Structure formats: C-alpha cells, structure tokens
Image 1: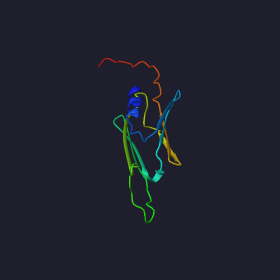
Image 2: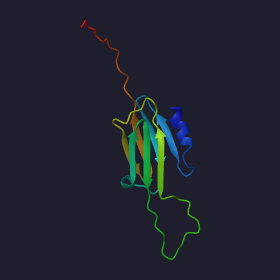
Image 3: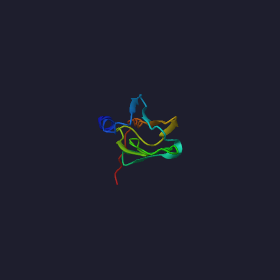
Image 4: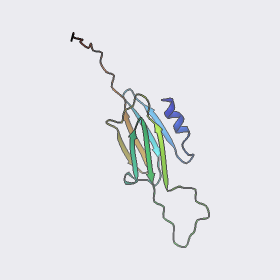
Length: 118
C-alpha cells in the first residue's frame, strides 16, 4: 500500500485525497471541486486506478482572466494496493467529493489438490 500513499503525495497541490482502510476494503476520498458524476471517469487497468475529471467554469460576462490556476481537467493514475481489487468497486460523488470503495481480495481458504496417476 505504500506505493499508493506515495502516489497520493505526488498529486498536484490543488488535489486533496484521503486513504482509509478497514478489514475488507479501502476508501479513497478525493476532492474534485466542480466535477460531477457525469464528468468523472474512473477505470482500473493492470493494477492501476485511472481518474479523469472535468469541471465546468463559467466566465462572467465582461470579465477576462488575469490569472487562471484552476485547471479544467484532472488526470491521475494511482497504483492499487496489492490486496485491493476493482471487482465490486463502487464510487459516489457528492458536492465535488469522490468516494471510491475498493474491496480487498478475500483470503482464499486452504485446500488440498488431489493428484492422480496418469
């Protein structure tokens, strides 16, 4: 899990994220102000979590930007903890806050494997 912690530290300063852990899941909470469920795309590929978020910005009439530090897009790629799985993952957006529940792999029960003569 330290790779995910390290990756969270490397996110842009404008992105705030928390990582929580229970016995059976991880909870990743990411602030994505201005983004909605419709403008966020999350996928898991090859042990990595990809987050793409877009937000709308309205420029008031008769104003021009002097300085623009709030990006329209956020792209982040984070490693999954080694015991996390994307199967059964669930996400929820509320007021620009993404909560992503990542289940842990269930411990496989021990079993004997019968070997037969060919």
